[in-house]
Image 1 (tube, rainbow, N blue to C red):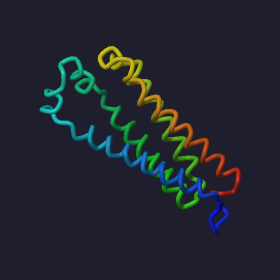
Image 2 (cartoon, rainbow, N blue to C red):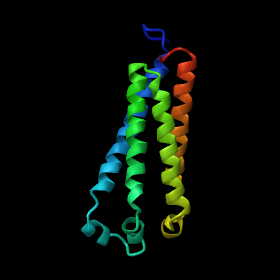
Image 3 (cartoon, one colour):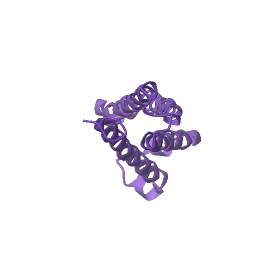
Image 4 (cartoon, rainbow, N blue to C red):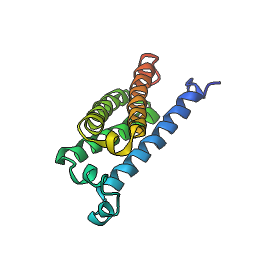
Length: 143
């Protein structure tokens, strides 16, 4: 099962799925960027500091993570090797963001151990996309 340009169909399925995944990350970024004081005040009291005390650099790292991931997905769809660079940048930013969330805040204490599930899934997905783009480059699918 290959397409007319000798790429397996699953290449396109993974690339489009990754694009949707990263668009969800972009949506989450804008949602967090637009959180108002009123929205924070409506949260349970123990959760409010998680949003009130975010360092200034956090949203920059978040933006780098989601927009470089999005650029990597676009590169995959265009069959460009710069997907590898963008996914590498995205993974680095995701790791920084999640080290902060999981180890430098009390998110797990406040939200419970399940608060680690999505961040770990994001790290794994980011690493998988980097691996996939490197593999595609080695196979000559992207250039």
